[in-house]
Amino acid sequence: MIVWHYDAPVGENMASGDGWPDLSDGREPRGIDVSIPSPARLYNYYLGGKDNFAADRVAAEAILAVMPEGRQVARENRAFLRRVVRHLAVETGIRQFVDLGTGLPTQGNVHEVAQEVDPDARVVYVDNDPIVQAHGEALLARNGNTTFVEADLRRPEAILSHPGLNGLIDFSRPVAVLFVSVLQFVPDDEEAAGLVRNFRNALAPGSHVVISTITGSGQDEEKVETITEAYRNSTAPAVLRTRPRIERLFGDLDLVAPGLVPAPEWHPDVNGETAGGTSWVLAGVGRV
Ligand SMILES: C[S@@+](CC[C@H](N)C(=O)[O-])C[C@H]1O[C@@H](n2cnc3c(N)ncnc32)[C@H](O)[C@@H]1O
Image (cartoon, rainbow, N blue to C red):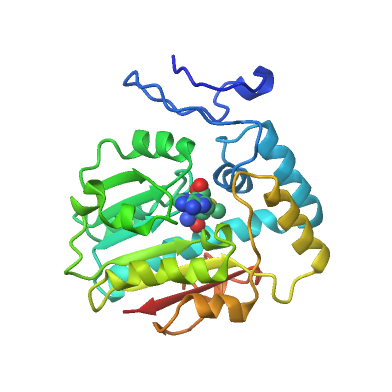
């Protein structure tokens, strides 16, 4: 029996399989507030997962009411994540990945994609949501080439000096740092660009920085406002940046082809996995 520390009413929240990770080692995960939506659980809901609570579902449904394509947008972003990891592993030979803002485990996690190419590929997951840590550790416990670091990406020095990360990642060799659908939770442009620069400065030549983030460019204003408002009431307020603001996040990095494009257009799969799509998420890869 897992004991979580929380004050929210139980009832529906404690329904079987409702958000609670199956930890069998007797640890007591630190508490989470299930009464406030979290980005990780909202995203999990869009993707059809069960690791969410009533507050998450209410907020998610408010967004989906004005933006019915919301689930598709999440799937497109996730498909981009799978493609970019595979692309970097196959086409550039990268064997080390740092996944900042991992999210709750779902199908096609970074280590699964990378280790399908090379079982020795190393992956460090980083997220600041305790529920992600609990689920992530349960999933990754048996894989020696992956680890999970619970940390806030706004503290890059703490991440870069973390023994868990340094035990797996050799920064003298190429690394891919993934900011996939996470920089929208760092609303200040200077801060977000500074974080990218911090990680980029630690990387050897041949490394890559991956950014995907939701954009307000070309979108309906009511939808943008509804999304912004819903996340304002979550554990991490979000910003929908315009294309030029997203471009600036890459700093002096050269973008590899095809540049900054809607996620479904970044090396679309020949097998048709991502045929067609929306332009809510812009994605690009910079080479160090
Ligand atoms: C929308 S999910 C994206 C998950 C995954 N990267 C993907 O694209 O499929 C955003 C994730 O970023 C995490 N996150 C948000 N702000 C963060 C921060 N400051 N530090 C670390 N993780 C953060 C959230 O907890 C959540 O798991």
